Image (cartoon, rainbow, N blue to C red; front, side, top):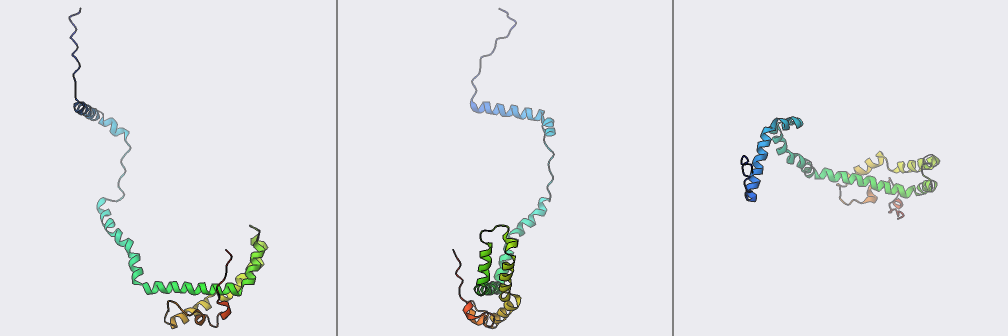
Amino acid sequence: MDSSKEPVPAPVEVSRAAEDKLTYKLGLAAEVKCADLIQASLPPALPLPLPPLLLLPLLLLLPLLLLLPLLLLLQNQHTSWAWLQRSKLTYKLGLAAEVKCADLIQAYNACAEGRTITAAWACRGAYAASQACIAEYVNKVNIEAMKVRWVDAGRPQFPDWKQLMAGIVAPEHLVKVQRPQ
């Protein structure tokens, strides 16, 4: 036997916690030694578009900016209700125009039935006739006349449509249109 060799020490039992601690320390040591290599392999850091101190006031104002339209709407409830009523006036005129121009609208629908892109030029005359008939009723002059009557009536929530549309549309045209389902 060769006496120049040192005896190999027997394996030592190490707890799991001690093993993890040793692995962690070895990892830190390797990280310190290779820090330059790691730093060189990383992409350059992107600068922040705004310094954080400038973002703070924006973050504080964001809830107010989001609530501002709601506050304006609540402040102008009367105006927003008036807008809704004006759109109802236009809608009612459109319904009356549908009743009055039903035969022209049906003629256009019959022409366009079964056609796809060719309906644009094949039914041009029927379409123009139906639109001209509707434009006789739904136009700026009639809408303005109805608005004036509605304001004169005190802007009622549920107006008397026959009174508002008197002279613009005949009473028999103020019936509901039955649309096919």
